[in-house]
Amino acid sequence: MSYNIDTWKTKRLENLTIPREAFYRSERTDWHPECDEGTDLFAGQITLHCGCDQTIKGTLDSGQIRITEFDMAGEGSGTLYHEILEPALKESRGYLEAVLVWEGGDSITRLVVNDGEVTSEEIEL
Image (cartoon, rainbow, N blue to C red):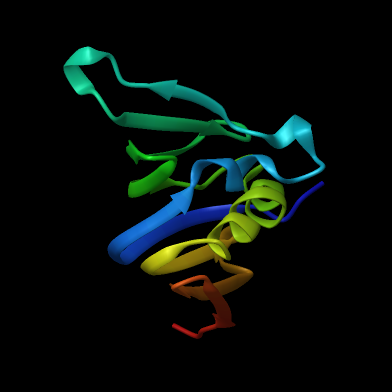
């Protein structure tokens, strides 16, 4: 059983791009996301369906996903975070800052990603 994220609050998201293939490097192929790409009407739009109802949305250009939205809470989110998302973020460019509430507030962390450097620190309210 994984330790899950109850709440993910994106605070800053600036030009965050991640290579599409970075989401498929994990040996845990059962956690690889399924992908919906936009129709001609929404060319370039992409949604990665991850874990147990988590999604990552963005636009796809030349194999790079420019992230526009994270929905990363709920059942399976802890495993997804550690097995798929965190390694993919290490290949990113751009900036992300988010606050994650784990298991009803047992732990609250600030996630900062800056050009592939991922840091996570516990914070107090």
